[in-house]
Image 1 (cartoon, rainbow, N blue to C red):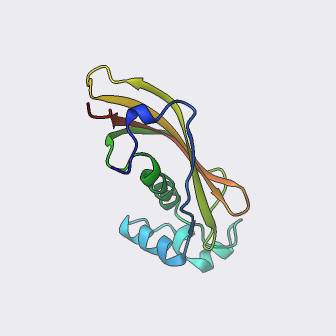
Image 2 (cartoon, rainbow, N blue to C red):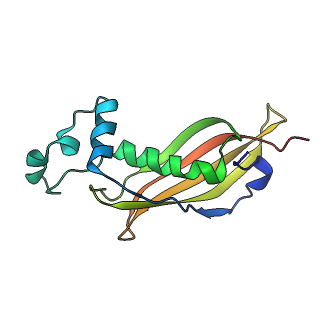
Amino acid sequence: MAGLYFEDLPEGRHFVHDITRTVTETDNLLFSALTHNPQPLHLDAEFCKGTEFGQILVNSMFTFGLMVGVSVGDTTLGTTIANLGMETVRFPSPVFIGDTLRTETRVVERRESRSRPDAGIVIFEHRCINQRGQEVASCRRSALMKKRPV
């Protein structure tokens, strides 16, 4: 497995993920279409010229999905039993077409599962940062993680 087990994820462990991504117009358009989101802020350049941003905004759910997805290879690939929840999801700065995003993850809490002796619960804090050093997204994700097989 590429992912880490519960035992490999102590509180405070920090990951700076190697994968970065420059967001394209196609990414934003396809994601918005696939999720049936017709918001003109994501699709209509003429509409956006009249907004405070003056340009198309990348769909924040794309940013969220990218942030969590980039973290999987270094942390939970094949070792997550289930995501239990996402909380404190924030988008403090907008993402625009052409922005390059990077992700960091920190283990902020963990505990043994009370109902599953083969698993533990890990709370990850994810942060997504653009090329200007601005945080554009963050969340806390709770995951039920496999323990290392005996």
